[in-house]
Length: 193
Image (tube, rainbow, N blue to C red; front, side):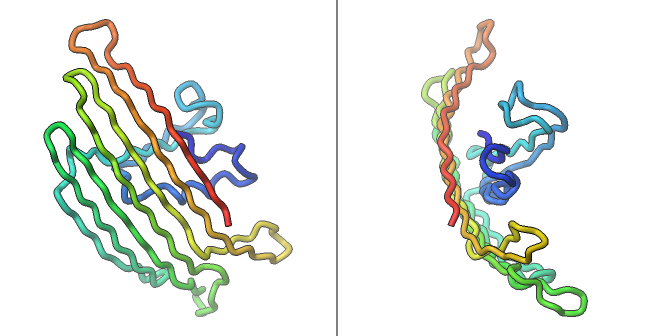
């Protein structure tokens, strides 16, 4: 599902921050053109995000933490059903970043903000050869600052949110010339405030 396409805005990297971190199992970087596999927006490379597999998660996991650099605090909770044919995993994360300070304890403007995300993923076995995977996530950044006009000193406050949903149908026959057939319709909704 394309997230950071250059056609979205003048600066496509801002939406990468809206990936639902609590839903991610891994990130992979593919350098160079990736348009054949990942679409026309993948000219310079692809960052491939893999979501958690509901079948491999513990029943409940929780994480609390803090960071001394920006005095941030965060918490994350993930729960799963571990059902044999219909596993479900869900989770949420929230982080509050405090004001950054330079080495002379000078505060950096617009460096304090909050971020949050939540997700739900279900992996349903329809038949021995067919599966349906449903995923939905919502994430956002609240009260962050950004300088859009460098050299003019303008700071703009913004709230961004993103919703991503997809349904993936997989067909994996036991004996066939087709190893796997996959169809993945998706919806992505971005809101800037």
